[in-house]
Length: 249
Image (cartoon, rainbow, N blue to C red; front, side, top):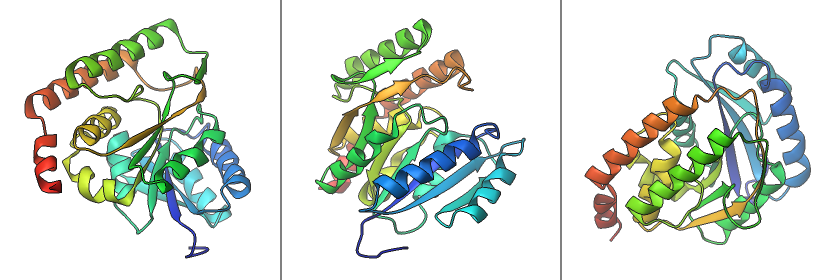
């Protein structure tokens, strides 16, 4: 790493068939981090999970163009699987991930890391807290998103306001102590991480973000919602945080 005296962070970009956006988004991110994250030793990992287009080829090209970019290829799909795979590797102080469409304004990324430096365990972007600004989101996605977080609060009594924003950072301790208990490998990964994390005593910082919807998103709302509901029921029944609480004390 560039400077061992600086805290280190690995930023994961999980991708599946994102050949149209990958090069432009990585170039934008590299430029932003070079200018605005000088107090960290940073690295970007493109996590290609079973793409069938030119995503992997473009990722390898980018890794040759930029010394701080690398690419990992997984043979199975799943955003959660891709993030887990990369977060477990290396010795970085902090691990992050963000959606490849960069819907969340990158100016909010440094505050996530500074929150971790202050001693919090997880830092997330929120589109639902005071000060956030959201534009372009369809009525269906707005209703399902707000209904979903209300359901989480009703059944689990947690305090975070946005489970699904693809803009998160965690400490190494979260990866070592909490990640082995996170079972989901797909879209519910985010929710499970936050619910089980908060219920286990990990502290969460929320950054109100500026977020612009990407109309070309490949997320299938109803299919994802069904998976989320199944995941919530599993957590409600199994309550895995009881085991983690015991292990932490």
